[in-house]
Length: 310
Image 1 (spheres, rainbow, N blue to C red):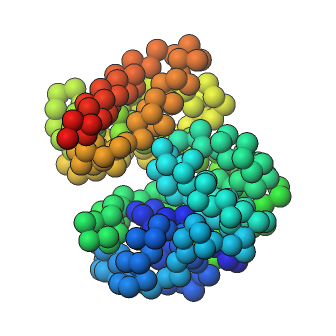
Image 2: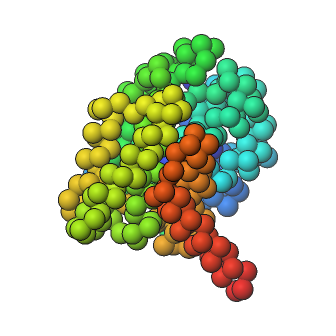
Image 3: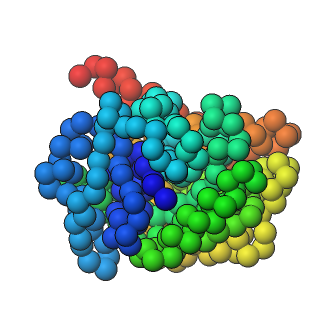
């Protein structure tokens, strides 16, 4: 199986390099500057268990050819359109595996390529690119969940999940990948909403008088949206999410908070805004999620004005 991974960031870069180490046929599609650095120095991964460097194959959008079986898309949601333009020459017979947050990207990809060429995937990892260009894994969490959304690519989905077994991360195949996407979205919207509004970690929020109750209320809002959308969150998934969201002393934060604090663009529209909109369309109040989205929209406007005034 020939795999093309768009980008070498926290998600694509981390899982891609682990696949390379496991012997998979992986090529990274990157911008010319990033290609030069990776070709010269390799792609360095820093993890809680130790660091390593991989020297993978790389191509640019101008060089890529339609020779791949699977194209993994792992950009930020706001970069999806640019990402699709860069992989246009790689389409061929490839099936696409998006590892984006939320679910709105599925409709975009289905319209562009057809549902029969769009798998589903969920990545769980906290990682970032450092100033030196390395990928830093922040916690031990590292898992992929993949599955077919159409019978046309079921065999490929199973084959990819099987190929991941030799890699140093957890990988699970599921026949209901869209439920897995909802499970993550509900968890992530709550984590992002609470940590950005409170500007602190889960543990810091739990140390306040009302933090746990508000977290549970926000999680319930998101669960109601999933239920009304035909994807109710199961007991096991809900219990696991609540444990992570209410763990005393936890340093866990959403990447949205880290991006906000770094003055970078965030996915608030795709994670919080889309959740609020879906809920209101179904007659749900969405009070806390709307508050979290409003806070992020205000901050985005402030950052935009600051950047234009420089």
